[in-house]
Length: 368
Ligand SMILES: *Cc1c(COP(=O)(O)O)cnc(C)c1O
Image 1: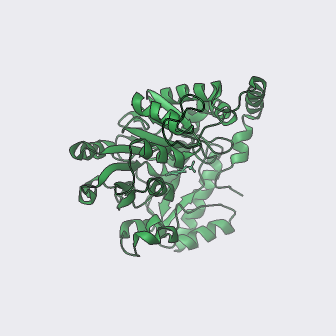
Image 2: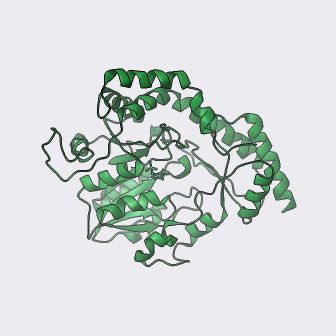
Image 3: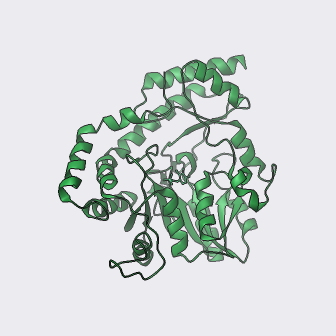
């Protein structure tokens, strides 16, 4: 059996540290917005090369609260990738604004900057750039367009902790960034968690109130806020995990290299391409195959777990019926969604396991 991602093994590596972290929080008697959260915020901001970090409840809330702080709401539009996890779109929808999808680049699967201008209207307020599967979006092109039209840029870095664009870590490449610490992410908590990273101290100050009932001082509510905080226990666990992030990402890159090398030259298979100047966090190793479902079930029969990220694009989800999209509206995304398969990937996967996956994919593709 080769699991897709072995969270049990990954987290048991630090069993004793987590127990110690839990004891520390228990002994402090302080469970929400205390020293652990504050320290994690400082450490994670520094990791991202940014001035500010604001811990929140999850990745979706990180994105949502930034859009709220920018006063984006009904009547506004926000550019989003058509090829992303639905959370990117939901963050926009929660504000009352409309997500306006833009198709991806065929090489990186990230939003295609050349198509963004065509989607901008007088109502457009911001662009959300998703670093999908761990590879940074083309931030310099996106920032140039944003500058030209006076738009904000929000990075959805939920899949890209530690990834780099032109030598700079994601998180400080736009006006603000949202991170998720969902357990399966590259930096995962032992439950839900998220953070916003920014170089803008005014925005950071607003967000510290927005996440906490709109209040800087207890029971003084300046704005209509939310309850979305990174609790002390998760912050304490994340502080233990952050020092392992670079090593873990390095291991992911090694696995990716084995896949890249072993699967090169198979005609029916499209491998991920990391463009010059990008360092991927390798959150996922995604291949495209025209018989994706057959490949997945063949691998499952051989004891190898795979996943599909994602089977249905947001514009075709019943939840977004109200936007009136239909099949064929975003053909590049639809093709990716119909052919995409994520091979096992993670910090606890062995080189031997990766080689076994390679061998089996080769066998399937030869017979195909
Ligand atoms: C996981 C994820 C989110 C949401 O994060 P949660 O912590 O699950 O709310 C947002 N965007 C992308 C691209 C994600 O992968």
